[in-house]
Amino acid sequence: MLRSERSNCRSSRKFQVRIKDHVFLITGAASGLGAAVARLLVDEGGLAVLADVNRDAGQALAGELGDHARFAATDVT
Image (cartoon, rainbow, N blue to C red):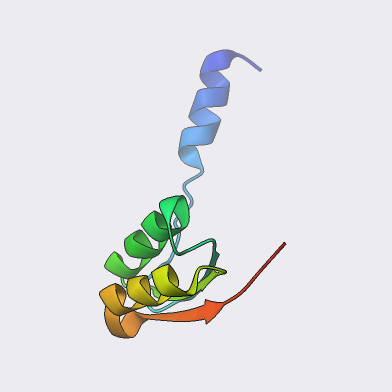
C-alpha cells in the first residue's frame, strides 16, 4: 500500500468519543495527569469517579468539580 493510500484510509475512519452524560473512572485522579483528565471530562459534560490514595487532594478536586464528580479513596498498587 502506498503512503498516500494509508493516510487516506486513516482519515476516512473517524472515531468519536462520547463524553456527555457518561461515567468515567479515573485512577490517580488527585493530581497531575489524572486531575487534568478529570477536569477535561467534567468540562465536556462527563461524570467522574476520582480514585486516588491521596484523600485530601482527591476530596479537594471533587469539591472543585462539583456535582459531576465523586471521590473514592483507592490504592491500586
